[in-house]
Image 1 (cartoon, rainbow, N blue to C red):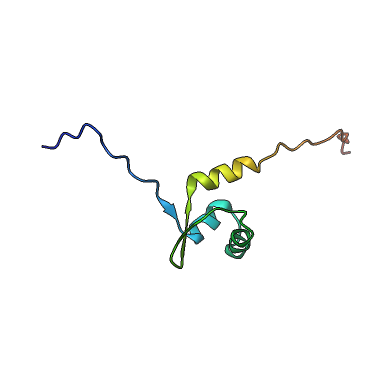
Image 2 (image 1 turned 180 degrees about the vertical axis):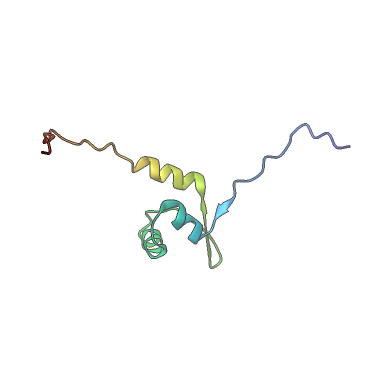
Length: 78
């Protein structure tokens, strides 16, 4: 019976490049372009790329803007 007073939290799972592209809803090629431009943070493990989901969420939140529909009149359709 183990009673650990300081339980270790499970680490945040890392996403693969394909999973990150799917999560961001962009093509995989666009993901690689944005990585090269340092617009999307990633972790390099040798030749592998991994992504923290929390960082991708922050990226989406930071780039979200409210859309103002403007003063366009709504026309009645006849």
